[in-house]
Image 1 (spheres, rainbow, N blue to C red):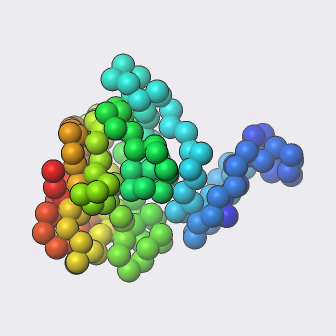
Image 2 (cartoon, one colour; image 1 turned 45 degrees about the vertical axis):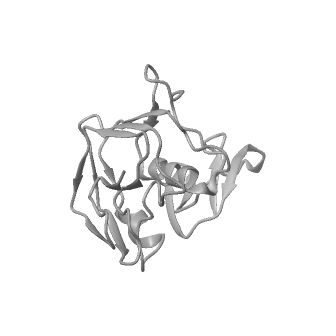
Length: 173
């Protein structure tokens, strides 16, 4: 369960903004989060243009991007959109607690659901990625890319296993 409140008063039940379902509770500043709580209504900062890219600043941002691109978000595939990372991100909780056996599902998990946008890591890093998908190809933080670019991004302290087309940043293009 993931509950986001409109106000900072968690007792104000009329102020509930959204509710989602996930697996691992994290309570911070008046919000109860479940690691792995994908929300199809999730909004990124920015507008997705080159001049005003979507802002990626948390593991939850990456998790929701993964959900949209991999088909869980309906038509929001972000084809041609621009993203910029605004700080270092640790994916350890999402890699292990969301799926302890297989770990992180790459953003753009297959040839039929590739990542088709532009991602600027802005000199920041993503760490703590665990992927154990021995029978899946195109594994990495991003899986399959098509008409996409990823730049200025460092991957550190991660374990990534797959079956062909394996990379830290991206598995294949």
